[in-house]
Length: 289
Image (tube, rainbow, N blue to C red; front, side, top):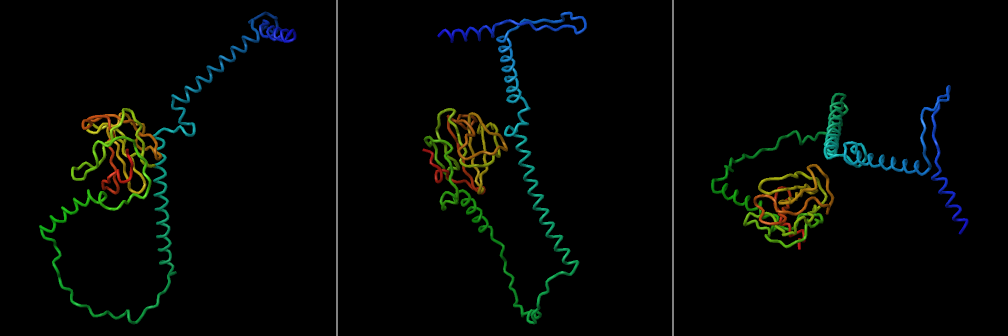
């Protein structure tokens, strides 16, 4: 025990032993500056300076535009520009390939490097042509009216009565009680799901955000485009967590449930599902309850 105490006293004495830092004039040896300090003061000062530097650096990276220079922290505008540049590059590549094929074809024509084809004597004779009877194929007014009615009915009944055509698994945007079902007869091409306030609303599949903003009628609305011509619509959200142009994953939270917009009568999710411009009954592919 005495040895341990002795070691502690020696360490304590070294830490708190005061020393003097003196700056002298080299020629006259006149004292210019002096400072009393010990190892403990030096340690504490260096620690405080390190903490301050780390705090300032973290603040600059997290709350200033400097974070955009760090990989993985690019802003939405930068991501959108990257996507547009990739699309333009792909279009230019395809156009270049088409032009190359076209120029190669012209070169073959100019140089005469063409494959000759054997002609059949039978192909030189034109067969007898029968007289073509002119038939008036113009539809009547009654026929046109019937076609418009059938097309209008098929547009909103095709995906409700036909066999399923969505060839991918869809994630449920939220679990809750359906207060109003999908009905093509009542022109309600969606399902309304009652939810608790600020319930996370999730994307049904991976895709790209086409629209994310507030509207007077439907409040906060977010629209996502998925593969296979599928578009999902989420209305009356309290807040949106994604912006236009963002790429989302399947099951990723995109908004919080709320009751915004003139047509909202309570906290719920108004969810629509479309494919190739036609509405689909979401309950055929998604389990909400």
